[in-house]
Image (tube, rainbow, N blue to C red; front, side):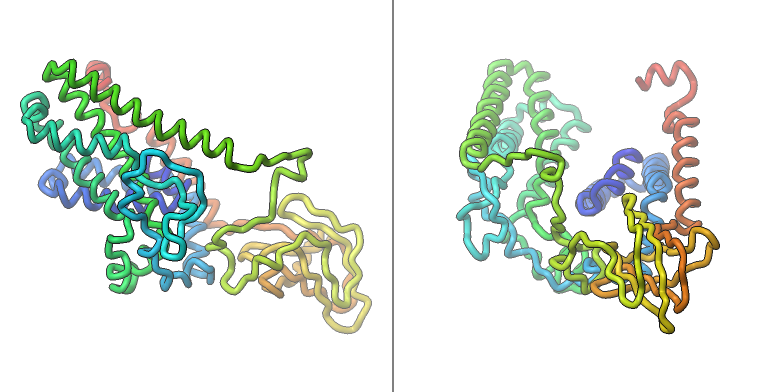
Length: 397
């Protein structure tokens, strides 16, 4: 759990939010087990060490979110229910290539190949059928049955949450942090991530029950049927993509990247991304020579022969942490949050020298990195919390 949650935090915050919601739901469903001393301590340790391992990321992130003003802090009014899937999405076996995710405007025309898929829907139906016939209850023990129930109920709930019929707008109207979290999801079909994991686990639970029951004919038909459904859906979609999509030809390194910015949630609020261009310094009252750029750092010779301050606008987005200084004297050159939130130097009258502009992390960011390293070392020394007696370790393995 520690590695899993730390990985989610450090890779995709929206997925971490989804998993967090379903973790809370799981704790509510199993609240009697949650508040047992041994269980609660394990969960608390997992949460604590996940945060410590992620401190190198969380501290800078929270530092910016608490002190800065970014686009993501102004999207609470964006509603998501109209972007939800239709129930018919989940009944499709042959998914087509498409890019439309705004179904309130164009319906199913050109829809994303979204939906739980015929195979996983069949798994859910198989669970209901075999459980009603008693085949699983007789074969699986209480813990395995509980696991299957949790996967089925939460998986079904995730499917429902991905649909436009789910009352996301009403939930969002509650305001506060709920409004912000719902809006940040952007698209309800993200819940299919959770549904896929849960129903895949349910598929294994059903197969295990049929195996333990000795229903070999049912097991063969079940596994074979799922394989056919998976192949039908995936092979058709792959063929559709290969034959319908236009090829992208790249003849050199310049064709490998673009300046495209998607949602721009972490741009400073008010930034116009359409104005982003790669350009040399734009000097006003300053002479700039010998400009060169090395990744995020810039160097140049500046001379202000006038009697007033001059400015130099750089093709660099302003975030707290950028500094400019004279490489010979160490004198700090003031920086402004300039036009369209670009880094802008304020060059004093009569100044002449070589200026370097680079990002310098605050000291507490470095401390957070040390905390993450220390937490990782501590986990290694304690073997991830596993028993250290050889006999117990072999037994656990």
